[in-house]
Amino acid sequence: MMALLEGSSAGDDLSVTFCLRAETELGESIRIVGAAQQLGNWDPECGLVLTTRPELYPEWTATVSFSGKLSCAVVEYKYVRDSRTRGGSWQWESIPNRRVLLPFPARAGKLLVQDCGLDLPREAEPTFQPVQEKCQTPPVGVCKRPEAPRPPAVRAPTWTFSKTSFLSSYELVGTQPLQVGGFGKVWRCQRRRNGSKKADSR
Image (tube, rainbow, N blue to C red; front, side, top):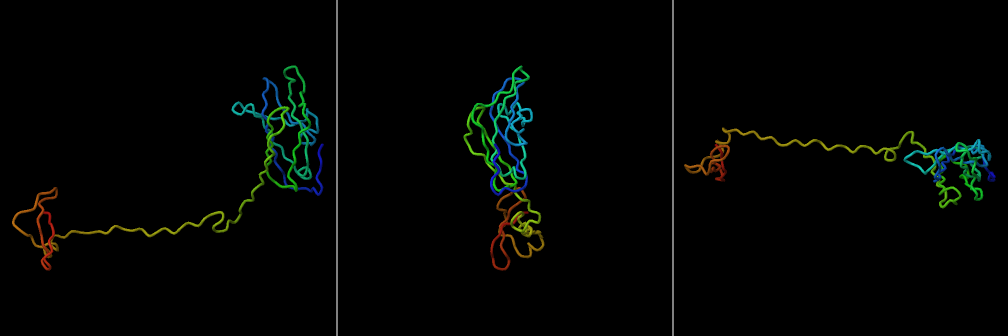
């Protein structure tokens, strides 16, 4: 059954991803068959084949797009195990038809349908994620923040020692140095004008 909802109209494509946990035998596969052309119109030969990978097994997934009026519909479906490569046949789920309500009104986006397992009812409702419109000309402060002005570089003060200018301002006190350091002798000095004292290294 595919019930078109009242007021449905053509719209953007809707991407629907079906996710199922199912353990299979080597060579078997899983298909989703239902009341929509994308799901084979209940013909398992034309159903949507689910795929898996070693790192994801036993999780199987398949993605299909619905557009136009189909994006405003209740779609019924079932999972079918394909055992023909092992000498078997189609194995349909024994539970009532599953149903998924596609967003109404039609909206472009992604719908995730997670089913717990074959013959097990769904525990959580599908989640819908609308397509976000891209910002063509981003306004300042919305898509891109303006760069803050950089503070001016601060240069360290430079000081040049002049022995001539130092001797003109200071005089040695005493006849013996205070100590001998790594740069030479350290003398006690005093300013010639106000008498303040200062150490000198020679």
